[in-house]
Image (cartoon, rainbow, N blue to C red; front, side, top):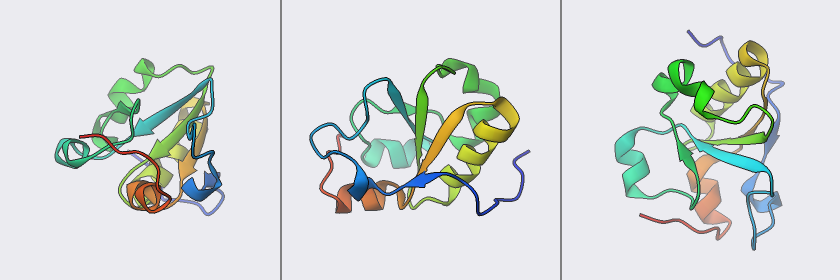
Amino acid sequence: MFPPMLPEVPSVHPSELDSTSPVPAGSTLLDVREQDEWEAGHAPGAVHIPLSDLPARYGELDADTQILVMCHSGGRSARATQWLNDAVGFEATNLDGGIIAWTGAGLPVER
């Protein structure tokens, strides 16, 4: 379903984001982790679509916005980013380091 990951996946590290407004205006933060991971803590305002559901549910995303894709540590989100960009034609960027790097950068998490 998802192609092998290529090194050219666009990425940004959470430490590079604005700490007062980490998701730029007009962007969507997509969390592709599983339900139990989501419930343990997620970024406020994120859209939750587990990676395995993404091919069936990507239509829920606004194709005209920048999509920042997050998972636990960056692997699944990189695969999702590549798929959204190559197969669907979205403008997606991997959030390098996932929720681990997000919290490490002091960005907010809600449960």
